[in-house]
Image (cartoon, rainbow, N blue to C red; front, side, top):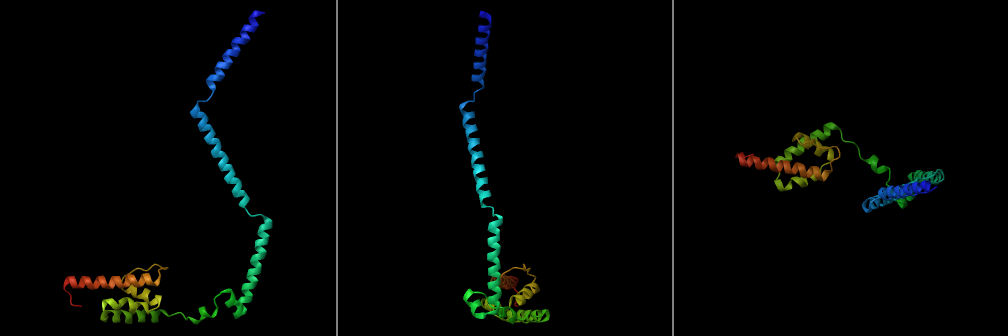
Length: 178
């Protein structure tokens, strides 16, 4: 009977040695704990995001609020006093501007180009500032300056004035008297 008990003790020792050899090192343990913390932080952030998702009930409340705002805006469009109180712009300001015809724009750009030739370099920006954006874009096109569709008027004025000043400077360097 001594044989089976020594066998179980030997296997117990081998099992314990195997267990001790399979334990992680301090670095592996720190890495595992860091990975678990990162996973926990990720899940917490995911939980926060899910909490922020609107529900059917909250979207109904928002929809009802938007409907009330829409009704108030429609009422403000009919009532100038209410429109002013709410700080909304009047609808007439957009209708009062008449679009400039293409021929008028090109004609005005040509006139402007002629007057720029006769004006002093320092007064070019002031001369350009008086013109509408459509005329300035046509003028820029006549000088070969490309204009992005959303370019602001002050930027375009600056670019045109710089172009004209540069052209005059080049002419002086060449000895042209124009």
